[in-house]
Length: 214
Image (cartoon, rainbow, N blue to C red; front, side, top):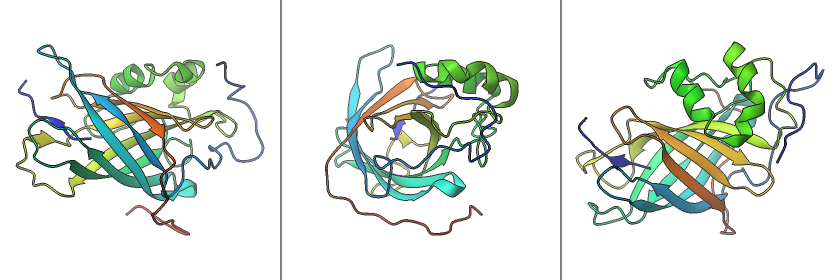
């Protein structure tokens, strides 16, 4: 979700020698057309504020660790209309993407600081600190970790007073479809929390039989 421009349960075993795939397994609650609704806390030292947010998955390719979708912010104070952005995401699968971001101005320290905000990350942390989690077996892990990066505004111009310069660290629960995330942008309020629940809206979107990032 765009943000305001500012000036200044115990998981199962997750590592080991699984002879099959060590990537996250498909989850019906994280698939094309799935919708989510909730809030993003955009509070700062001046005041508490939360924006209502809707997200829809528009594309999903687990084999390549890719997904994309739209994000709609409904009660942005400086906007006359809901603000919609298009985003692309990376699924942390130890094959295509690890827990180390390596771009978007995020350091390894930033990665660990944000991932460790999720309680479900705790059993993975020591291995992630060692090698980015490359040796982890996530095939039966009840959570899927992702990064979402907004690419452009869909219905407003770039002069709208909002920024999409940052990205989200995201944790998805395979059991109930809930999503928690933290927005990272060195120039925005830190640790803005995204909280979403799966909804029962009708599905629409597109899937990829084969997709490769350029």
